[in-house]
Image (cartoon, rainbow, N blue to C red; front, side):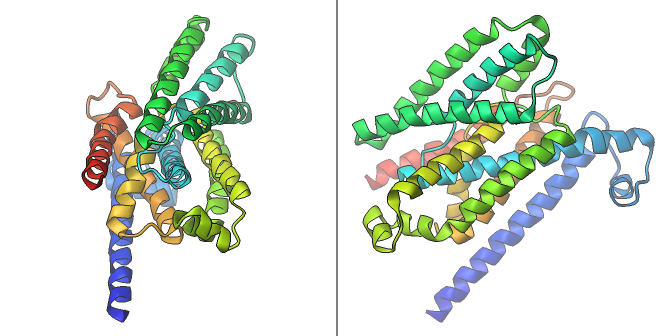
Length: 341
């Protein structure tokens, strides 16, 4: 028993150390690499001593750091949202993008942006998050109705994909009514991107994601009980009805925040929780939730770096890169499920 406990602690420590090392390396690489390369010694001067040239200072503090913070915060939020949805549906393929929840949020944000930008030049972050949340909840409602009607998880996923296609089609139709100045921003946002993030955006998303993530972490004990079955959770004193409502609300808020600021980003919510649980060899929420958040931040930092640099100065959409890296993982999960079945 003691040996097993020591082995678990060693595995957790090694995984956390590897993740922390990857995070630091990717953090530095994201600051260093780009259309203008900034030397490592200059990076430390600018970050800690307010030194360096004025040009490098502006590039790091006004462009790269806000973008990096967005990829860290929103990547962690997307991964945590996927973990909560997988817990809710008891399905490793469940995720905000695959279930069409991101597409529903995208649709409502597009409608609000077209309506507001046609009269005003800007739209507040709070309005975008609220619109995305409404869209996410509408899509989630359809998914829950389908979940009651079908028994097989494969049909649930197919239904989610169909909801996503419908919402994306309506979004494209809505965008045709936007004026020329708005179409460029809408097109870039609808493909998924962390570019153009301001420090004001970072502050808003940090507050929303931090509060939601803390609530999710505080629910670790009932989430762990729910993973062992509804009957077990009820016997442990968990109010199943309110618990399921909280899971839906928390995952929708996280998904809405990501979509409002960065657009729909695919496969992160499925791939990262699966990888984290595979590395840790456990599904305990108390351990998985913080590491899952860190894993999502690392995954999006790496994908954003690839999106910015691989075809520079042309920039790829973040969703394209996450799909290329995340889709094989999802296929592997499905094949593993089929082999077990």
